[in-house]
Structures are given as C-alpha cells and as structure tokens.
Image (tube, rainbow, N blue to C red; front, side, top):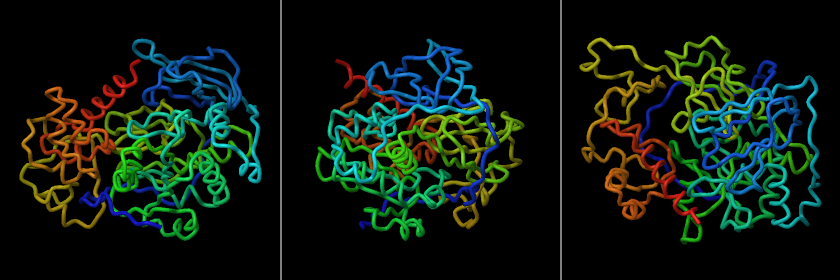
Length: 448
C-alpha cells in the first residue's frame, strides 16, 4: 500500500457535512435520464413519448459511437422528453409502473469470471449500458473499448466535498467490491484502488484490496491527481477511472444480469437543514431529497458537487454521475460595514482574514464578493493547484490563443477542481476557461 500526499494547500473547513446515517427517500413516481449532464456525447433518441420501457431498456445512443448505449433507470411509460436550444435533449422523464419490469442480461458467476477475457467483458458492459461508468483521462470521456488502458484507477473516496462517504456506501458491500475489482482485472492487471487516508474503517475492512492511500485536502482523491503523482511515462496518460459506487453497479450488473439502479446520495451544504445520506435510485427527482418548498431565489441547489456541480431546480432530476446535492445560500444579503470587518466567520484561503484562526466549520455562499478584474499575478492559483500547472500563465496563453503554450504549461493535467477560481482575488473564472479550452482541443483532436 502506497501513501501519496496531494492537495495539501490550505482550504477552510466548510459547514454542512452529511451525517453517516442512511435514510430512505420517500416513494417516487418519476425518474429521468439526463443526457445534458453527460460530457461530450451527442444523443440519438430511441424512444418517443408514450413508449413503454423496462429497467434496462435502450433510451438513447451516442451519435459519435453508436455502440455506447444509455439505458432506462426505471420501468414505465416515457412521460415527457424535454428539449433545450437547438433541440438539445435535456431530460427523458419516465413515469414508473406500480410493478417495474426489467430487461434480462446474461449473468457471470464469480468462478466463470476467471475465464472471461477482457474483450468479452467489455462487450458485455457495452451491451448492458455499463460502459459510460468507465471514463478515461485526461478528458474524462467515456472509454473506447477498442483501446487497451494502461491502468484503471478505482476511487473509493469521493473527489469532492460532501459526496457520499466511502464508509457509508461501502457498508456490507465487501463481496460486491471484490467481484467488481476481479472484473476490472480481466481488462488490465494494473488496477489501482485508492482511498482517503482518513477513512480508517474502509482501510481496515478493505485493506487487502487498496493499493494507494491519499492524504490532503480536496482534490487529493481525484484520479487525475493520483495519475499526476504516479505516472512514469507518457503512455500512462490515457488511464481509465471509475468511482467506487459505480464499481458496485458494475458488479451488480455482471453478477445478477439485471441493470442496477440503487444509489447512495448525500444531501449537504451550508443551507441544508439536516445534512445526511439517502438510499435512493438513479435518476431520482431532486424534490425527493429536499422537498418542494425551498426558496430558489435565496438558496442554490447544486447537483454533482460543491465545486464541479451544475445548478438544478427542485423539479429537476439527478444525472448519471451525480450522487450529491448541495444547498448553498445565494448570499445576496448586504453586510453592514463588511469592508472593514476582520472576517472571522468568512471562509477564505487568504491569511488576511481572521477566519484562518477560526477552528469551526464555516458557512459558504454563492456571492463572489467582488467583480472580475485583471490578473495581478498574485500566484494564489498556483499555490493551490494540485497538479502545478501555473494557472495564471496557462490562462494568459489561452487569452492570446497560444494553445501549444497552454499545453506545455500542463493544460491537459488540469483536473477541473475549481480551486483556482475559488481563490482568485480578481474573481476570474479560470476553471471555466480551462474547461472550454480542453473541450475545444478535444473536438479538434476527434475531428477526422
């Protein structure tokens, strides 16, 4: 077991951490697939309003690669298909039957798994709509099963604050995780299993499976950060990765022949009344976790993570990869004489605020507390960057369209953690700029 120190830069302790208990969500009548939340894909519908689907029925494929299938998270009737600008498919909403039916796939016993080739296994995962849970670095797109991975990184710990804790969602799931890891090792011998060093219970229960423990603040547990600290050659860069909960889904699918839908979802954040974990299902409505009485003008609902998530409404649904909901105050209220207060309760990475001496968890809001200004080369972003890409120079290279120079600075190493944007005193959306540049570069590389 190897210990790696990463993400050591100072971040304030944020209030709203969920309790370790798991509660069931209230009964729901609708679930949805959210193509809009899946990066890079161009969905092609295979259903229409009024069609009946089972759990595991085909909903849409990717126009770029038609073998990538996205299956239904529920059994019932296609109730509505929401389109955005330029006919972008936002939501495919399914009204659930009282008794949901499931599609059947061929299961693999643990003994038979030893005799399955990696190519055959990937074929089964592709046919069963499980391939999207395997993604590749540096762009985090769905993997190409025709290209052998140099390694697969399994991230048991969440790579963002307030995601479901590993010791919560892994409780009682040791055999499933073992099965899932055996399956991944049929694809490549280099399977790295990582966990946060603070997860003592997980390290004790799953120690024989874990290859790397990670120490430090967010995003120390991100697969891209691990790759940055461990790679030894250029060929290691296109590593695959998968989150711990998704390994459970993969194992359930292969061992039972049923498309799995169970999810543990955390509801947290500074505006959450009782932050906790919920036993839920894929594509569940946001209102099932937080109700429908939240004032969306004063509280922002973020699905998928505090730093990387997307803003959603109470009437929305969770996307394929989203396992957390954060409730954050908008922070529009004015603070009397706030410009001269020492900031003992204001979260900041700067030492100029007394909050640096405050041992308590601090409440965050969505207020920028300032307007965008020119970069002043303060190096705040460089000090906090977990992969040392010198964000300020990368940003300036992109401003003048010097993509090659940005790549030399390490643009593709960026893990999109959002910390550079969080600490920037000039309020520059650095991470948004980097994400746009990587998307543009990805599309250029993919062009025939």
